[in-house]
Image (cartoon, rainbow, N blue to C red; front, side):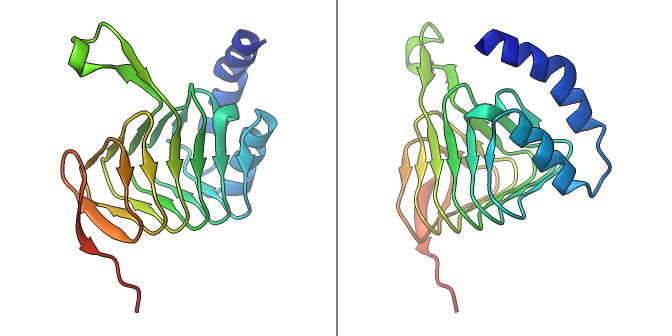
Amino acid sequence: MSSLRRLIWTIIGRPVFLCSPHNAYLYRRLILRLFGMKCGRNVRIRRSVKFDNPWNLTVGDLVIFGDGVIVHATEPIEIGKRSSISQYVMLLTVCRDYKTAGQTKRQGKIIIEEDCWVATDTVVMPDSHIEKGVVVGARGLVDGRLPKWKICIGEPAQPRAERVLY
């Protein structure tokens, strides 16, 4: 069943998603929901976002996906309310393990809690957990757990400052 679902997504769903009008966010949400994505209200997904398995994705209300985001969801990905996934971010739930020279796979789910911002060109590795209110700086690498209400930068991303809302 999974391979049939993937085939239908690849042949029908993805091309229909890509050919959608620029501001057709409701239309794109509908397509993704038809393919099993659990999607909150007022989610904005740009048409250049690439999903391989939308049925493994759970997205809260008011989430934004920027242009060129890659969502490789062979394992579950959960994104909390009011989060922003900026341009060219890669969410990877499976990849080769560098510790074994690529001989084994690393895989695990990704959790991004509420009020987070994953900035431009960041890579989020398998089995990562971004806690509530975290800002991940541009071109960061998230590998593991990031503590709540922090600004994290670097490769791998480390907490550098407290995130304060005025």
